[in-house]
Image (tube, rainbow, N blue to C red; front, side, top):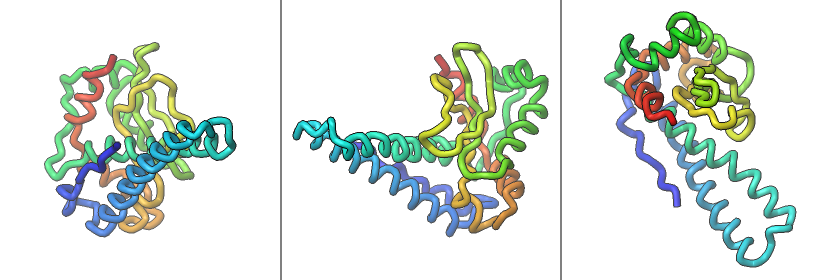
Length: 195
């Protein structure tokens, strides 16, 4: 069983109202609860020999939505901090950004532009071990469009629930707030643990 993590220490985070954060935490907890429910139902259906039913197939498909919603929010909340840290310009992550994008500034421009695109979803800095390359990607929904085998280094939630309460339609202001409270040491550790 998956257990919801407690992110209440983020309450009072600059640029994120407590109301917005609590709403977001509640949504995350729903993903955890639903992933667990689906696991239980699917296990029961397997035991009853119902794996060839349309219901089993649909629940299997739904599990990816709930699981990825849970895990991406854990990555997202886990990199926010009241004591944000800048990206270490001597870190392997910074060096790789410069190698793959020409400069950190080029990477950030690309990431912000991706996050500002119309639509709902996620913007994720991925590391592709096969090509040894960083890529910023747009993910429409939790379970669709992930780069196969790539490691999420830095996800940014750009579903409306992440910013509408505090910023209305001003997504660029939300993206700026995200960068102000980002603990880059978390992203650096994710990158350093890559396979």
